Image (cartoon, rainbow, N blue to C red; front, side):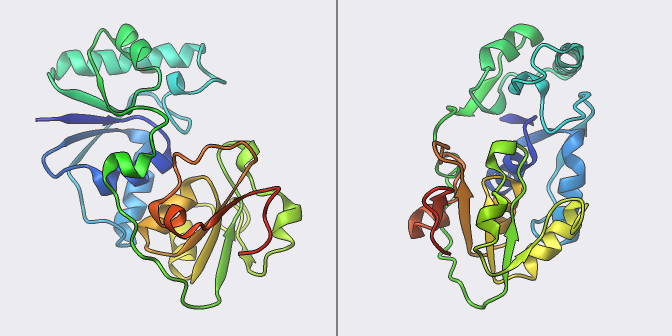
Length: 239
């Protein structure tokens, strides 16, 4: 039986909970539970059997998977907690989502995690998630410019050219529930390459992705790829 550890960011989690098999044993970092609770309360997913464990992750994901906090003392505390968990709860077929820094994770935990897919693969395709045939039906456009990485935030110069409701974290919503409510009430979502994109797919809302020049497309949704509903910042003309 496969055991899957979800230790990455909120967007990764929103994808994984749609794709993992019913036979998978899911162990998730406790920092992801507020998003899970919001998805359940808003009817986005059916309840799953997930063991939420406090691995000391207080940011958006395991520090080992970041560049900014890679060498911090918190990183080694988090890895120590994972190491303690797998020793106390042995598993012979343990997985993490992708292969980035897998060797370091295994070295510091003394474990043999495997990766569900190789980093750089199209994530939705790797999980077997298909295009849903989403079609725009209505004029209520929601624009969600924020992103975890500053370079992915949609510039204000572009926002001024799109007719719709701009909703920003901190002023227009502060919780996952409020963000999901905004998406569910919209007809079309214009978003950065971040969590709101994956929530739009999960909520079956047609969407358009704006991303920085030179940005990767490995987290783009099947619907955006199939319909060509994406543009770099410099090439953007209209939605």
